[in-house]
Image (cartoon, rainbow over all chains, first blue to last red; front, side, top):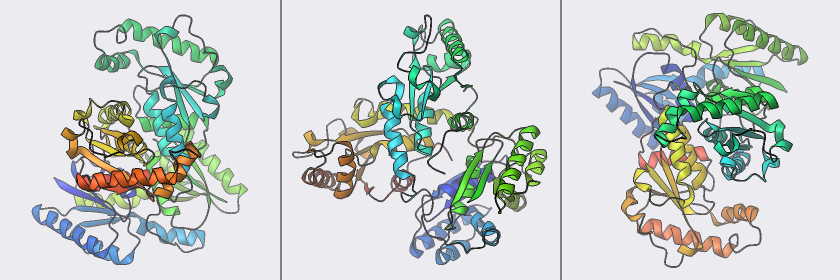
Length: 269
Length: 269
């Protein structure tokens, strides 16, 4: 199997996203290797030796995705026996022409604590954890969004992703069996109705997920799942709460669609 | 201010990372606009109209970062009045030559539920939440890693990030004031010593963070913060627990360094 290296002087997250987006276009399996914080010439020489060793072991040269801006380190990596893909290189000079200014590369540009948005994100994570699963119903005036839905419809991972990635204070509140008879909006949610966003899910998928947690229970029964979903969807429509079916969506897709539909402001790009 | 558009037929996360990495090289502010799930020609025409309207309002054409693989949609976006940066385009044909096969573009390639790693990640998020802040000390045999440290040293956001991004089951356990006299490893952590990873932080930064939560308390006092940090660092050294100072690090950097130092396997790339 061919090896793909993702290398950077910082977290290497950008190199990973870049390389992964490209390699996912090809129906081939790769061995993945991320090497972060390559900040010195010594470390770069070690990495070069590792790439060369990997190249020797295999008949095919490794693919090397990197984003170095430091010239000395970059030259060392570029001189290895791998095939180099440096996505910054190709785009910097057209951008310089377009913007009429020179690039000012610094190490650790992205994904660092120096981004303005950093404290927002940690605050948002703390908020979302403290307001997960209806644990703190007195605190919704500080929420940017309140996700609602039945148990296991995707509220918690989506709230955390909104907080961690975008600095959005996302609370979530579950509608449970006890709420279901004549389901209506709980009084403490009424003042925050504009912040509500509903999740729903196909009954079969919900049964499968709940079965994994509590098999052969009322909670995971077809009858219960269908009833809960029917009730919450009725509520969403009656109260005009925007909502989304999460059955075939990843947490990234759910949150992108929530941002799309609500126009919520992100604190991080 | 010039506008940067990030556009895709999926979440647009790849376009955002790509554009942000490039623009962060330039000391200029941009207005950012993400448009996700542009999946039809009709939607593409709307987006083109929006870009053209933005171009007209400003003296400078917007920058447009996209990753479209569908030709029809791509042609519509490429014909707008913005400046197009399509990072897939430049790299696909060199990669095809190198791999000796043709790219097989599909929509929604990355960040979707169809990635093999998806269920791992949701399981890991559930695990990390259930085992946050020492809430479930009987469950550590299922952990991939257990972060330890004093209150507010970065354990919780780091655990959640490891789980959400990499599918790693990260528990965390806090050392509190009660533990501090003659601090030693709690008995329930001893069997899992190889999974422990310590966090520490500078006393001043810890005081600032704790002051924000409980001002003028023993908890946020200089004396208490210094004592707790001295004790945990002594423990890390005595027990040979690898550890990291989080003072100047973002959650992305903390987790990248934990992966680096532990060699933990990621379930997602």
